[in-house]
Structure formats: C-alpha cells, structure tokens
Image (cartoon, rainbow, N blue to C red; front, side, top):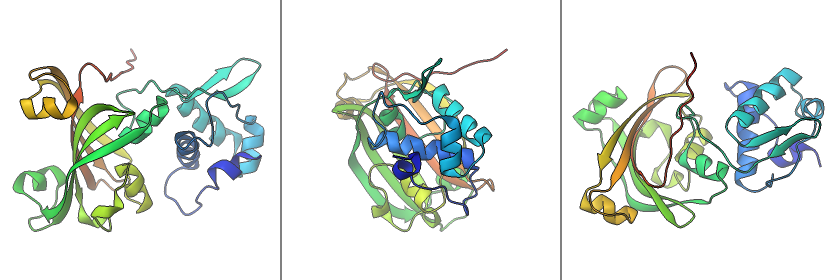
Length: 244
C-alpha cells in the first residue's frame, strides 16, 4: 500500500510549505494508528514519487519527525515508526499531538465552554478591539486516565464557526478553518496548586506545577490563540535543546 493511501494527498492550495503538510499528515496517521509503532516507511524516493514532491521535501519532513521522536532511522535498514516523542519546548503542537507521539490516548473533560465578549485583558493579549466576540474553552487534559493539565484557551470567534467545532484537539479544529497558528510565544513559570486545581488534577494542595502561557499567531501576525495551562510537575516534562 502506498503512503498516500494512508495519509491522503497534499493540498496544493494550502499556504503551508509542502514539507510541513507532509510532516503533519504523517503525524496524524500515527495518531490515529494508521502507521503503527514498528512499521517501516517506504524509501524516501518512493515517498517523493507517491506524494509528487521532491526528495528534499521528503527528507525535511522526515528530519522533523525524527527530531521529535516519532520516527527512528536505522542505518542500512530504513525509517521506522517509533511511537514515542521527546518534545522540545519550542515545538508548536497541540496536547493531543504530544500525547499521541508518546503513545498515549489524549482525552478531555470539559469544565466550561462559553461564548462571550472580549475582556480588557484579553483585548490586550489578542490585540483585538472592544466588543469582539471570543470563545473560551477550559478543559482538564488527560493522557490515558491520568489528568495532566488544566487548560484554558481564548480564541477569537472569527477563527471557528462555533463552540462545538472543538472536539478533542483545538489545533485540529483551527487547522480545519485555516487558522492554526504557525508560530507562538510561550512563557513558563513554577507554581503551587490551589486546592481547587489540586482536586481536578488528583494531586495534593500546594504540590508543584508548571504554568505555561502561549500566544499563537497566524502567518500575517494576527493573534489567534491565548492558552493558559497548569501542568502537573510530577507527570510532565518540557525539554529545551540549546546550541552554542
């Protein structure tokens, strides 16, 4: 079976570079189990012919997947699905994609899902004017049956057709409307959990955690996402690769 039968064809009208489209298509195939752990990918030249792209495009896409742990290259044997990802802190991906890369099943428990008018603080963070309609999503994020994070995302209403658009992955919903962020700014700080947060995450009051705030941007610089997440300090690692 050709790889295109499993991941589909690339979108010629998309603004994303073809290597990013190919990389994400393979990620999604791994996430839904179409490319199981241990399976070998076809040779790069065969992928290039099948997907109608250059070998340079294929190599760049596979390099990104290898870097993030989704693929393993074995000298003389080929490229294989590893089923686990070691996620750099700079990697712009959704919680669902991260968990799929680690071989876990992501799910969410909704706390609130509401439509409203932007607040002054949100207006500053999103760069949108007073009176703008926004969607607010607060969820407890699970990896298999372990609560990992409490996540609140604020999305301008122009980016989604409605609240029900978001099922499991916010980024999948945004990608479906052409509003998935292409870059983001993140800041991280250590926190201790309040009693309410601790109860939701199944930890003790005062246990340590990580607070992550992300601002996601479209290619034209428009802010399309502000997400604030509280991660369990005992169950989630962020990795940053540094170069001299």
